[in-house]
Length: 210
Image (cartoon, rainbow, N blue to C red):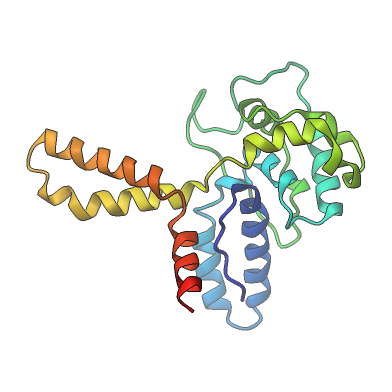
């Protein structure tokens, strides 16, 4: 089974859905392990929510036919009132925790589209004009290029969050006072700004030593 390490946020939805499909197929090999892995994956479906799904339109991993289907599905769910300021698929009112989509063995990216895609597009300043064009025309479209600048600047959430939590937990025990704790948090923030992707830096270092 392939690694599911994700360096680009635009690839996350495709990676997660592909992993889910691979795990479904792996049931034929070991149903217990596959079921356990799927259960763990179901707790990490943020990038498959409607708000984050439009990022997949900019992924080089997503086949053109899947991009076309996803773009069409998003356009079909266009709300009557735009822009959307509050997502619908959240618990509680307003900005509660995201409601994760239900995945099936046949689920495609297009199946996951809903009105919240437009909320995410508004927040990320994604200009939708290119979505009605043939995918082959997207690369030269001004609207896509303008939108791509915003989405490709996003870091993968887990990479930043997990690194911050780990670094903080390593040193928080020595923070006996509030000021010490604040110093630790500032050090974490500084580290994140200096090392935007440790996995990539590590691979580059290993490659340079070979």
